Length: 180
View 1 (tube, rainbow, N blue to C red):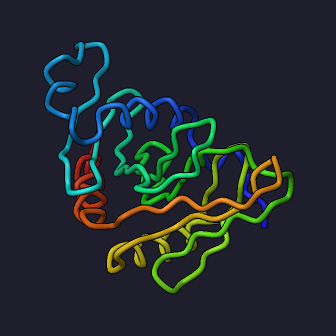
View 2 (tube, helix red, strand yellow; view 1 turned 180 degrees about the vertical axis):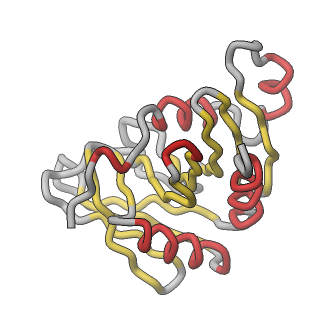
């Protein structure tokens, strides 16, 4: 099943990359140094996850970096996002650290459950809203998750995330965009 690019609101990559620069040890410094034009609000840091809200466009997201990455070209992260204007809630996305081999499957493993993801470039998503909901439900009760695929160079790779604090960060992000 292919994902339509229109399913994703424009701009999440820049927001998520900026958020990762302050996660979580630099959270307080970034909050103090943020300019009024940035309009990014920290909703909290929760163990290995954090939550943020951007005002223009309005979006809220829980975000984490892997504890063990692939050592690739990009800085990987995982997010669960809410985009009220687009009526998108609980959307799972992962930015991989490496470029993918064309057609390579991307699999999310949450404890003992496997979820196939749809990839585009260095990003991967659940194939639809039902997949997002199943992934988010699994994240809430699991201890870790891993994303596995094959790099453009031909080698397999895995990026592993701890999920302690994920449920709280996901809830904080959902509340941060509630009724807005």
